[in-house]
Length: 87
Image 1: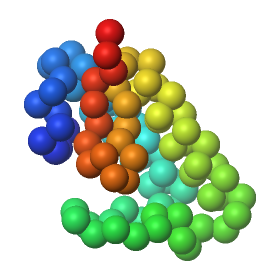
Image 2: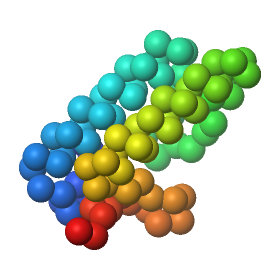
Image 3: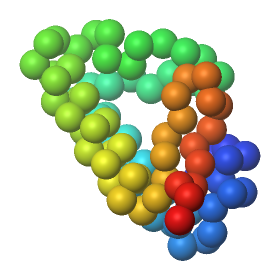
Image 4: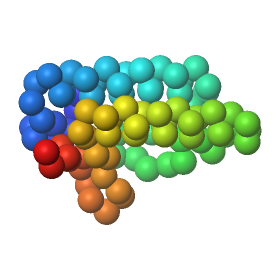
């Protein structure tokens, strides 16, 4: 798992997050999603048709739900990094 934010998570949570992220990346890749290079921002879903965009968004929503279930909150664009939810 990449990113300085991972330092805030225990090892078991890091492994769960990595598994969820790997699964999400695989599923999105199967739909034809192009992932931006590190530090580059672009619309990953730009070349997808509307039906495929909906499938991709459903995969992203599923990822967010899975992360929330283990107490990890994805950041908004202005926050900068995921955080472990308060227990």
